[in-house]
Image (tube, rainbow, N blue to C red; front, side, top):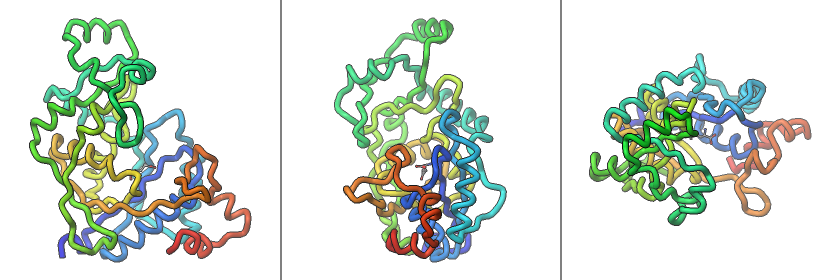
Length: 285
Ligand code: GLU
């Protein structure tokens, strides 16, 4: 059976911009269970490229909550804020291939000109700045206009031809199935911003490769974004892990738990006297 050897490496990759809730607990426990089934290792990675929202206290709380759940992981823990050079280097590969272009559109420009929405329901960027001439690009960059660098997704797809990735599940030891990727439904995604040489999409593929991740276990809400990851892996010559999309933990209204909605955190539940077994039961494990 492919990839069910002791070389399997999985990861749980939370962003320290709030405290963990039951959704994270499920994802973490699920990942450690899957690693066990595969006879492999589960790593922890801290995804803290958002310098404004990430806080060291939340990193400490993540370690604490996961240890409380009974989980352990190899050291050192990769922290994305330490890896900006690696992301800049990957960005340069795309730039040298003429696959990144500067975009000067504001959020409201995009909302006003969007052509439909992306799989997450956000306005779909219509490619306004894709055809700016070189002179204008240089002038605006030199002037210091706020800029984001976008992937020319259509050009990138022309380079790679047919794009697929492997999905396994619900049982991670099953035989993987081939899935067709359609990154064009995301339009030209932002991969770098002024002052930040990366985005979630770029960091995640660079780090999954750097950590030799063989299986990415993530929530179903991240299924569509995997199309972009498959594309970036091809463009950067990185291996593509096997993907497994797990269920989401929903609140009483059937909505996904979220830090931004103030969903009850593991810290709250611990204060109420919950045990790790209560958490396991609550998430159906
Ligand atoms: N850091 C992301 C989050 O907290 C998840 C990363 C991933 O699974 O690729 O939502």
